[in-house]
Length: 231
Image 1: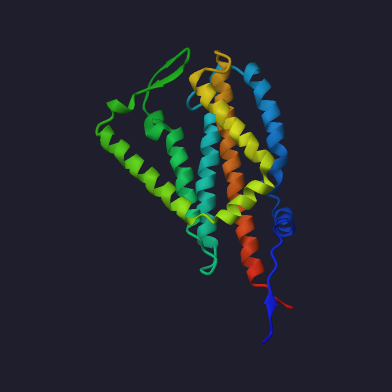
Image 2 (image 1 turned 90 degrees about the horizontal axis):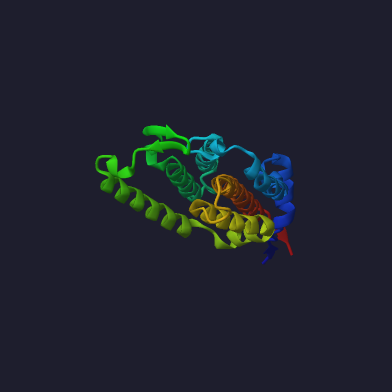
């Protein structure tokens, strides 16, 4: 009986694929550190209104998240029936969840007034049936995250982390800056809000990067499993 062996070479295959695609997978690891070094000093220079609700940074965040939704949906529907994975549907749902959070579940369209500190919107409690809306959002969040966790190939996810240690460290740092900036515990000034918004944008771009890297790695596994060489 003839024996066959299958070899996986993640690094070589991912490099070949990403150089061909010229997408975020190759650009972001190099740009992430530059982004971090630039947005921190910019937060002290830019005017306060740039970080307002519905401001330029938040609009950019929304566009990145919507792109993540459509990119993951496109990845799912364009995959062959053999390699199709429902994780792309759940990732699209996760990006949609983040988008809903960024627009405060639609409250950004209910402008109440504009003050010197920025726009003020009607509270969620002023919306009819807000308790029911909260329950629906919570149920959707729990279901999507649970299904996403169940559909992840953890071996591939660990490969993503191993190949992007620098980006992962910066994501953790950005998450800390987001939490502290939201509470005004960084500099106790308007720069806190600007740092928070820039850090959130960094996290969303990194999530999109990890989605693309995960796709590259899973595509590599699929291609390699179809290639056998006799021993």
